[in-house]
Image 1 (cartoon, rainbow, N blue to C red):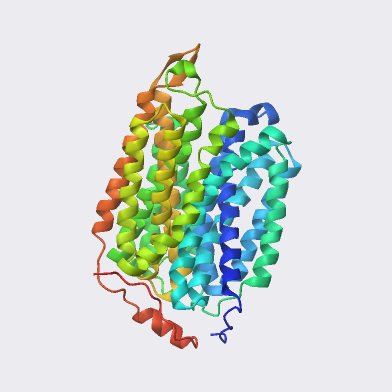
Image 2: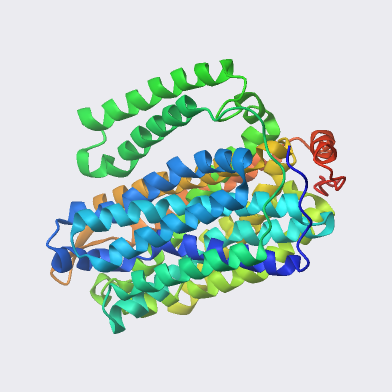
Length: 488
């Protein structure tokens, strides 16, 4: 194992730089959403092809997040993080120089792969910071996924209405370059490594299963949920996943340690992450669309693209403010308490949304409550993961947890699309979703949050098992222990 590197002289800079990187890559996930209705006219593509600008990002993010997390554990987290940012820059430049739908999809695929920056950043912070700083730093880093999603929509809307649409990709590429420079100057390379060979077969098997599953989920609404293509992909995903699992259990250095992942502390945390990802994403998907619906619907506000995007901005600011609050709750009461509280807040937020669909300010209030709960949840999830896995598997474990959030978002996207497409009426000479369609989505999202609460309450309590962590730190010349405990 390599000699330990000294901690940074200004660890606060490292935290700020990594959090900034996390926000940037999260913004990339939603930045094209306001542009989608205009893509067919701008590029000559079909609406179905335009939809791939979002779908392909989800697919590559889901595939590369756990894979790059494992690569980072083995070969250097900062090295892989910088490479991920480089991929983001290349993808941004591809989108900036072309209006061809194929090139745009390729660029968006590269941008999606960069979401691995978030779990890699969490792992670096765990390795490098003193114990008293870890929880608050990790909470902020994890929350960047939600902060970026909330910021991306209004920023993209402003750019689209005032500049050429390629501008946002030039800007994202330039910020990606700045991120790389800041990481190289302010973030040290973690000396902690996991041993063994990279499990290439396991990575391919996991990727194949995820691609089949997510393709079926994201395209099922267009293909038909009972179509041969959708059912065939789901069947292939199940078969590949079973074969992959059997293979991984026989490997000495598997891509995903299924025995560790099957521990209740890790398994239930990942299930909760999927449900929280579902509940949070419904807020992002329907808010902008709902307030843009014409007044002829009886509930729509006829808001502009910019105003609809700005509805989510207070939620993004709330997430920034609440991540340290979540860290303090986790330090005093345990991350399980934080996650349970968060799930309850999200459910309350959707109750507010259900009864306040005619007022812009009350819609913003409900959306902000949901975002506040998400901030606390996203801050608590990595703390729960890290207390259940060896330090040498932090990157892969947090990558898997981030993947579960992405899968939850994919299922949410499919659910929202199905509900809004099937519960419609004629309003002002056009077909629009009914108010009951949006209210049903709020009910489903609240149900997902309550189910996440139930799963969280089933998590094992007591103090974290830090023996493995401390042993790994001692073997690498470190003696700092992780201060992640579950309160009484």
